[in-house]
Length: 70
Image 1 (cartoon, helix red, strand yellow):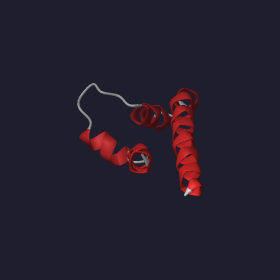
Image 2 (cartoon, helix red, strand yellow):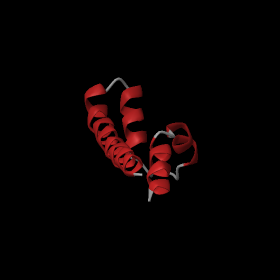
Image 3 (cartoon, helix red, strand yellow):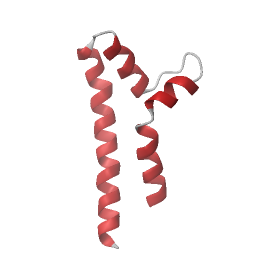
Image 4 (cartoon, one colour):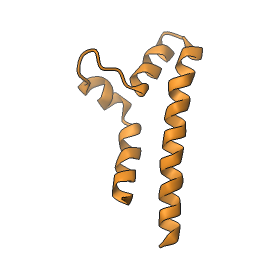
């Protein structure tokens, strides 16, 4: 389980690879936030960015609690 959580954290922060390797017409939260932010639409980029922060924080909290148990 710990390995899966660490992999998820690594995948979330790999935006450049996501932008290069993604299929056509396939948008993720990271690419959506990047597109909005690059067009100076910061209010529109806030929601996907906040979602990514919340998901990553949950993974980090679960990982840290799992490590502290051992």
